[in-house]
Length: 262
Image (cartoon, rainbow, N blue to C red; front, side, top):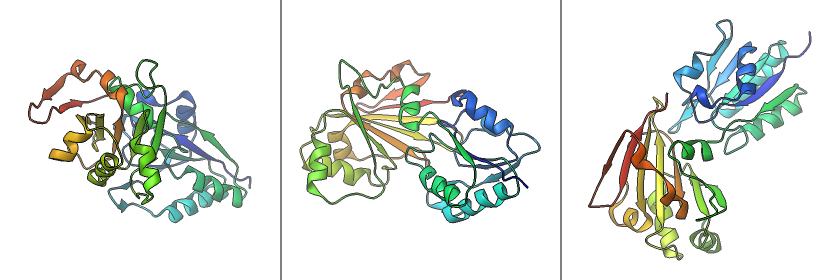
């Protein structure tokens, strides 16, 4: 029996409009699809009726399967001669476990290919007209994870004084500490900040503020879904007011916007 193949496929920010043509082709020919959380219903509707779809998502500390179990399934189904798609939110190699899955496939001699996706890094920001680079404001960005924080003062000094767009994945739980450390190590109080959360139904929620205001009044999450934090001058270029629903709070100067992209 010939071995099957595994495609590590990026699904983008979660809606079918953001799928690449390569991702769609991989999904349509799949025998088995192992898919993540936060993929919209319109993406799930594209799964072939004959394909076996297995949910392996991880959200808020609750894992449908451990990563080791996901790895085992990839190898198991490929060895049965099946074409397997590992469908991941965003891009497989941007703050995902794609590199770990790739290593396992190589160790077991499983043929594979990679279908890159639109990363949430810029895909989510684009929905709110937030450019991560701009010639007029900041022409570079740095992306970090906020789940486990370094204690190195030089690390925080570098982040606090960074003049590009700072993008923080998985940082909402630690946001008060992150903001405190940035301010302690020199970040300006008025530095703009935007937080974009994604709910389980695909609806996104935007909070705009400044480091100083978040430090002073805190931040209240609108969803239990993941969020990305954008800090820097480019936040000023956002067009939240163009959305269908928004409100302005005079107490905190926050702009809270809600949008649904179907």
